[in-house]
Image (cartoon, rainbow, N blue to C red):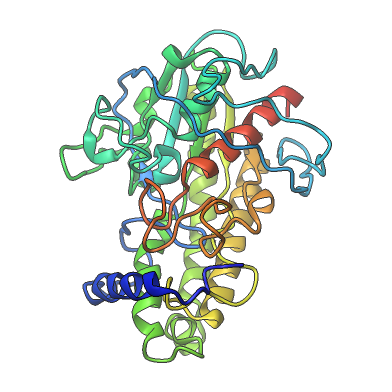
Length: 369
């Protein structure tokens, strides 16, 4: 059963939703956004400083859903329900996993780049990571991958919440202090670069806020889609069309600055239910959820195309996460909703989700994809 249970706690959750939505501004897409929506991640910036990852990962099984195999260098797990991916370190077995020999193995730094979907957004907060305003976590997928490769000391995590493509080459302002350009962490010695990027450039958190606010005006309609497509132009689709070339340029620059590195671009997970909604627990109408789901698919398609064009490996995090959206039960979902049921930011991957993504990456590295 999904979050449709109308029990007493719904009243408290609804109250929290009303308070949160009341303060939301109807910021236009493309503006900086706090968290994420269907395809929205908060970006992470780079300090260029090496930091040691030292926390236990969530003990969750890796997803077994089938993925569509992508051609050439794009490496989504391909129809491999029977193909086990390397185990991710857990609290019970903190260093038992290894991706074995392959592109991720060897020596040299592992660099984590991108937005909040890379950083982990307080899952929980890594108090040793600077600046604290990037909200990096000790349980993010880069940390889990590095630990599985027995390379925790080699991880340089410069991902930062709210980061867009500009934060790759320019300093990003955070709530504490500026995060240096993320690409400053890349060198010819970098062996592996991991990133999720693009959602913040769409202003997807502001879009989610707008959709939640408008849902109260027309609970059985698609008020957000109507607002964002008024005049015949889909604002979010236009932003995705502009984002594709930027991601391609960013990946090209990563290859140039880290010519010996394996570059892995991770797409966004399935954030929205495949049908209906869980309004008012997450106050987005069913019609708008269908619209936003389509936007997320468009963004992931653009990311895949950029990876293919530059020889990077693309990880399809969407297909294996279907059914683990923010409307799923708490012990099933990978993405939290407006009121998180576990320690993470709203509309972000929880510990189970980061563990699943790490497993997908390790499987791709094992295959040499």
